[in-house]
Length: 625
Image (cartoon, rainbow, N blue to C red; front, side, top):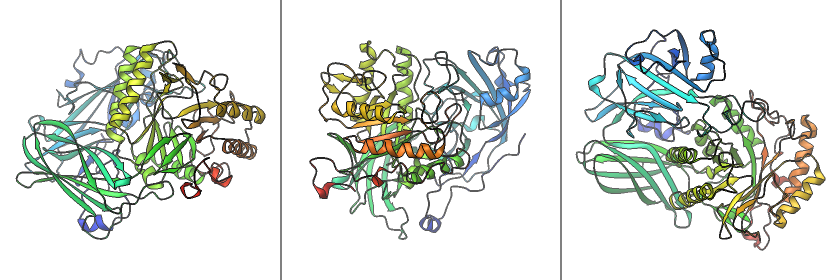
């Protein structure tokens, strides 16, 4: 068993250190930090496959002779390959169940009578059950079995079941079920190969212990800016064990502020019952500077929950003020038109260190937008984008079959993602579906269209800080002649420049059929008259065998420049080149996945080197060069 691991940095810091700090150090995969101590449980765990699903019946959580060891984080698939000699089934299995176990000594952490020990999984799944010393744990949300594999979940540990040395047991189950949100991973419907990748599930992110207050703010923070009035609406989540009167205190600082005095501070008295509750409050930030790719200005929020005796629970996060809108045929950022120079990004199994290199390289390419393609990723990518000034387009990992159950799973995955990543100014666009994967009957099934329409409206009401795309690429939904998408997007692939020109002309002319692989709009009749921005949200793919085009870097760069020029010659609001790095069979990347080095010239995807953005009918002072 590997030695109990402490990171070589903690989250406790003095006020002097905090003021002097010039970067936001957030080693855990979440949007906020806590001024406490944490202990990683990453490293070597005992491991067994449960090929016949006998573990629950035989009570492995009470004791089991584990045959193997495995590294956490790591995928079940990696661990299966390492333990392959014990398999008597084919590698393609309908359901994979694995058990992990390790011991850890009771942490010697600075505590307080008001504190408790919390266990958090950065991500694990698709189904996860956890036992401590043989006792089944229940998540803060009350789940005996946590469902989902892309977002974090936590357990509050009862002191009655803690020991000097503790045994933590985890059962992870995953299937090839096409109703499960899985993005481009293989399933019963789509087998591995081409653009369908090997599954990567299970213990995929860190797990850690930390001391938290019994009555606290959870690591969930929503931020909505009202830039015209220099107002910010914060959505906080309280977790209360002791009902009573509390004060929520918000303090805003410059990110690199030297003074200990906040720029803005406000108190909000709250009467809180036991349990979990969301609360929205508004704070004015006088003289606020706005966040943008050119000037990614960030503020530091210190949020405190103070009980009637003056005891303080505190979280810290960074945020920025920004406004994103779709007005007519253009996207507006902070009330100025902005052309979206985007790139498709599929990090796959890349480490966070590799992801950082990729993000810097995409900025160097001239991108102001990164479309994270139907994947759940390390949440630290959002903090990095906030700092670098990269707009992010995020997507719900799609199921592979359209059914009532797949829609329920899709909605639950969306809710989990929203709860954890709505802090970041970089996140500006959400896709509900991509190319009707998981919604294959969108053109013929009114229930499918109603579900997507309902979620589009939900996003507008509850998360107005985002633009929302119903089904990216084609088959957008029209209801009574109104598009249920903030953007009209199209996926266009052709290696022929003349055909490229023809397709773009058809697109801006408003031709809804014969442009993409399927009609651009389904449902009620829709008539395009430049009332919605057009975005070519996938194009290029040069080097991928099924798409054609140049395969060497020099000719690829020349072709990209020509194609970008044609895009900018038309009333198109943005584009997303496919893609950033190679991944499995898709060999069309512009960035070396290992080193982060560019294979093409820097600035290649920055269309402002081609021409200035000049929306028709806009005055010069309102234009962005």
